[in-house]
Image 1 (cartoon, rainbow, N blue to C red):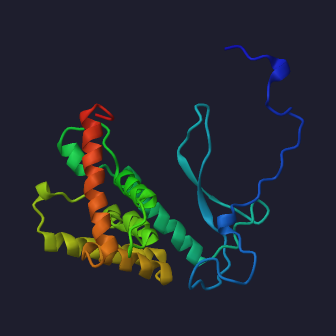
Image 2 (cartoon, rainbow, N blue to C red):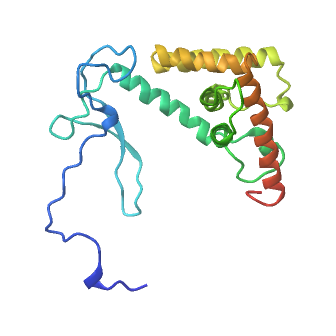
Length: 227
């Protein structure tokens, strides 16, 4: 479709571009630690940057930023650990649920897809006396987090339940080390263990969400949504 140059919304080439501020995620505005148990340790952060080519994409390139380029260097070792942890969790977005692969589903949901809709279920669930809905949301978010390392182990893999639990526990411990330990890492461990042991009414409810989400997804595949 032709574009009328008189109504084009792009800024004129001679217009000075505003300097972009560094992401607030990395900025420290006071002496208070940005993350729990943070030990001040000023350093520059090496970020992974994509330099677009003619097609808009090129291979990744490591770029060491200087103070003159961007002031995200006021980060510390703890914020670096958070980035490493989140990067590791990216595997949850890219790892497909093996059960659907085994059933021949094309382009099946990822582990993160599954956990996200479970968290939504907890979010929109009606109030139940004695149930901490916020805790249900947290449990749903972390209940399969160890699969970022061990993958989606299904009954067809013939891995004994006790062995699977030990593998996931070891993976969870490793992920919490990547995060740098501390209060948030301990909370993730506590939530995961609570779900694994079905140790609370919230964990029991989230296990029900797990089954309902799987049934809903199966119905969607059966009706042709993503099949």
